Image (cartoon, rainbow, N blue to C red; front, side):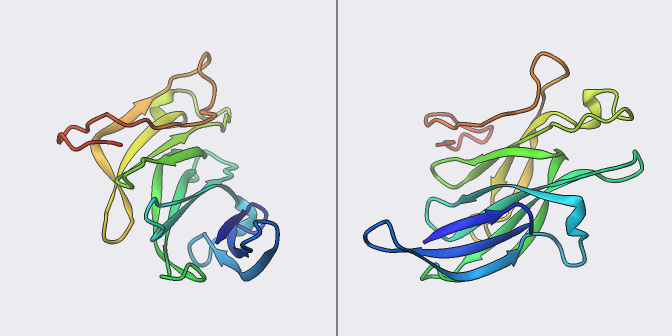
Length: 183
């Protein structure tokens, strides 16, 4: 199966890829990634990942804000994929922990999700403490697939020299604060 994130409609489509790896057939279209009632013109889909075990799919969405009074934090949507991969349903919508989640990655064990937030520069955001550019480490619940914050899981990137996060890669051999291997 192939899962396509549709930026313009903030949705996911499912395709069956033929054994020849050339033929493609759309089998399900337009699973919405935003919470019910969201104004799709204010959001842009960003990235998509499938868990190593194929049970879960995550997407990120970036909110376009026009004033400082709006909450501009992005969203991570968790889907549960059916056993045959041909359908799925939304499990949860989780705050990304910052504005404009540009990139994210899931570690090889499927236990951790690391999201890079950043990229919106508006005149009313004046310091990195406002959460513009940061990296968040989230633990993935192995039963539900829903990512959740961990106590020491925020790393501010600051302003200027770093720019916005452009990619995240996770390697094996690291351990979290609880001693659990991160990949």
